[in-house]
Image (cartoon, rainbow, N blue to C red):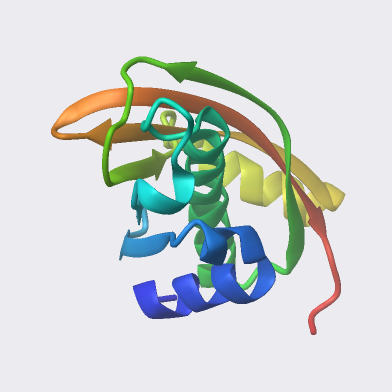
Amino acid sequence: MNEHAVQQYLHDHIPLSKAMQVEVLSVQPDEVVLRAPLAPNINHKETVFGGSASAVAILAAWSLLHTRLKSVAVNSQLVIQSNTMNYLLPISGTFTARSFIENGGDWARFVRTLERKGRARIAVTAVLEYEGQQAGRLTGEFVALATAAH
């Protein structure tokens, strides 16, 4: 899936992403990068609302898994099971979220388990960046449940 297709999918199926004006900057096999502006995500202190920052990080992580599963033609329902979000710096403008799987070997095991058992779990990291600095970090546990092809 290319950037346009992923962005269209997010906006059509996760309406919050459209309201937050999330843009897909890059879709690569090993990472997805999203961007969001301050205005629709602002809080009372004129910085990015923590819930918005977390949501963009989750969207980046989810998008990475979604695109990777599509690339290997595995049909599944993908949901977040749990996450930890650390806020390191206030964000006062447009920011990005870059997602990746820290342990590359986890992907092969994840796909094998999903195909064999119909259910698999994997951890994904998303780093928030603002003005060249790491502003936050999310670690999320995602679960995929095998589904029939549509």
